[in-house]
Length: 125
Image 1: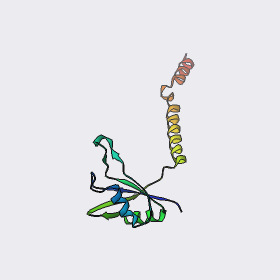
Image 2 (image 1 turned 180 degrees about the vertical axis):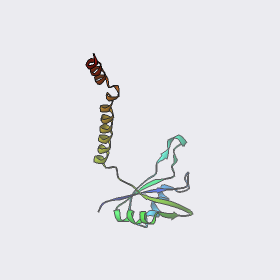
Image 3 (image 1 turned 120 degrees about the horizontal axis):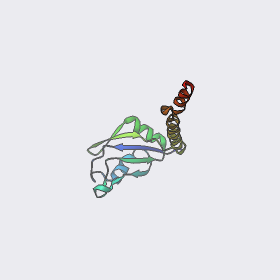
Image 4 (image 1 turned 60 degrees about the horizontal axis):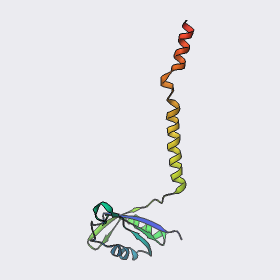
Protein backbone atom coordinates (compact mmCIF):
# COMPACT_ATOMS: atom_id res chain seq x y z
CA UNK A 1 0.00 0.00 0.00
CA UNK A 2 1.15 3.52 -0.75
CA UNK A 3 1.77 5.94 2.09
CA UNK A 4 -0.42 9.01 2.37
CA UNK A 5 0.58 12.45 3.58
CA UNK A 6 -1.56 15.32 4.86
CA UNK A 7 -0.94 18.93 5.77
CA UNK A 8 -2.38 19.99 9.11
CA UNK A 9 -2.78 23.75 9.50
CA UNK A 10 -4.16 26.21 12.08
CA UNK A 11 -2.29 24.52 14.92
CA UNK A 12 -2.10 26.67 18.04
CA UNK A 13 1.20 28.56 18.27
CA UNK A 14 3.91 27.40 20.63
CA UNK A 15 3.71 24.07 22.40
CA UNK A 16 -0.03 24.02 23.14
CA UNK A 17 -0.11 20.83 21.06
CA UNK A 18 3.01 18.70 21.09
CA UNK A 19 4.09 16.42 18.29
CA UNK A 20 2.98 13.51 20.48
CA UNK A 21 -0.47 15.05 20.92
CA UNK A 22 -0.81 15.37 17.16
CA UNK A 23 0.48 11.85 16.52
CA UNK A 24 -1.78 10.30 19.17
CA UNK A 25 -4.80 12.12 17.79
CA UNK A 26 -4.25 11.03 14.20
CA UNK A 27 -3.31 7.47 15.17
CA UNK A 28 -6.99 6.81 15.82
CA UNK A 29 -7.63 7.14 12.07
CA UNK A 30 -4.77 4.89 10.98
CA UNK A 31 -1.13 4.06 11.53
CA UNK A 32 1.02 7.20 11.63
CA UNK A 33 4.50 6.77 10.18
CA UNK A 34 5.80 10.26 10.82
CA UNK A 35 4.80 13.66 12.14
CA UNK A 36 6.87 16.58 10.86
CA UNK A 37 6.43 19.90 12.62
CA UNK A 38 8.74 22.56 11.25
CA UNK A 39 10.19 25.10 13.67
CA UNK A 40 10.79 28.79 13.18
CA UNK A 41 14.51 29.37 13.62
CA UNK A 42 13.92 33.11 13.78
CA UNK A 43 11.69 32.63 16.82
CA UNK A 44 13.97 30.50 18.98
CA UNK A 45 12.85 27.27 17.28
CA UNK A 46 9.22 27.85 18.16
CA UNK A 47 7.05 25.25 16.39
CA UNK A 48 5.20 26.63 13.36
CA UNK A 49 1.41 26.48 13.19
CA UNK A 50 1.33 23.59 10.74
CA UNK A 51 2.60 20.04 10.46
CA UNK A 52 2.82 17.18 7.98
CA UNK A 53 1.62 13.73 8.87
CA UNK A 54 2.55 10.60 6.94
CA UNK A 55 0.18 7.65 7.25
CA UNK A 56 1.03 4.05 6.47
CA UNK A 57 -1.96 3.95 4.12
CA UNK A 58 -2.99 6.51 1.53
CA UNK A 59 -6.67 5.72 2.22
CA UNK A 60 -6.35 7.15 5.72
CA UNK A 61 -4.97 10.42 4.38
CA UNK A 62 -7.69 10.62 1.73
CA UNK A 63 -10.48 10.18 4.29
CA UNK A 64 -9.07 12.94 6.48
CA UNK A 65 -8.69 15.30 3.53
CA UNK A 66 -12.38 14.69 2.78
CA UNK A 67 -13.25 15.77 6.32
CA UNK A 68 -11.20 18.93 5.84
CA UNK A 69 -10.68 19.47 9.55
CA UNK A 70 -10.23 17.65 12.82
CA UNK A 71 -10.48 18.62 16.47
CA UNK A 72 -7.56 17.92 18.78
CA UNK A 73 -8.61 18.75 22.34
CA UNK A 74 -9.96 22.30 22.19
CA UNK A 75 -8.36 23.09 18.85
CA UNK A 76 -9.89 22.66 15.42
CA UNK A 77 -7.19 22.15 12.82
CA UNK A 78 -7.35 22.32 9.05
CA UNK A 79 -6.46 19.32 6.87
CA UNK A 80 -5.26 19.54 3.28
CA UNK A 81 -3.75 17.21 0.75
CA UNK A 82 -0.01 17.29 0.26
CA UNK A 83 1.09 17.02 -3.34
CA UNK A 84 4.30 15.02 -3.41
CA UNK A 85 7.21 16.72 -5.12
CA UNK A 86 7.63 14.76 -8.29
CA UNK A 87 11.22 15.04 -9.51
CA UNK A 88 10.18 14.69 -13.16
CA UNK A 89 7.53 17.38 -12.64
CA UNK A 90 10.10 19.68 -11.09
CA UNK A 91 12.45 19.23 -14.01
CA UNK A 92 9.60 19.94 -16.38
CA UNK A 93 8.99 23.29 -14.75
CA UNK A 94 12.65 24.24 -15.01
CA UNK A 95 12.66 23.30 -18.69
CA UNK A 96 9.55 25.34 -19.27
CA UNK A 97 11.15 28.38 -17.68
CA UNK A 98 14.26 28.01 -19.81
CA UNK A 99 12.23 27.67 -22.97
CA UNK A 100 10.36 30.79 -22.06
CA UNK A 101 13.56 32.73 -21.52
CA UNK A 102 14.92 31.52 -24.83
CA UNK A 103 11.76 32.63 -26.54
CA UNK A 104 11.99 36.15 -25.17
CA UNK A 105 15.66 36.29 -26.07
CA UNK A 106 15.00 35.24 -29.64
CA UNK A 107 12.62 38.15 -30.09
CA UNK A 108 15.14 40.60 -28.67
CA UNK A 109 17.05 41.67 -31.79
CA UNK A 110 13.83 42.41 -33.69
CA UNK A 111 12.98 45.79 -32.15
CA UNK A 112 16.38 47.07 -33.27
CA UNK A 113 15.45 46.43 -36.87
CA UNK A 114 18.98 47.45 -37.93
CA UNK A 115 19.25 45.19 -40.95
CA UNK A 116 15.97 46.40 -42.39
CA UNK A 117 16.80 50.00 -41.86
CA UNK A 118 20.19 49.80 -43.55
CA UNK A 119 18.75 47.88 -46.47
CA UNK A 120 16.13 50.53 -47.06
CA UNK A 121 18.61 53.33 -47.11
CA UNK A 122 20.75 51.44 -49.60
CA UNK A 123 17.84 50.90 -51.91
CA UNK A 124 16.88 54.57 -51.76
CA UNK A 125 20.38 55.74 -52.75
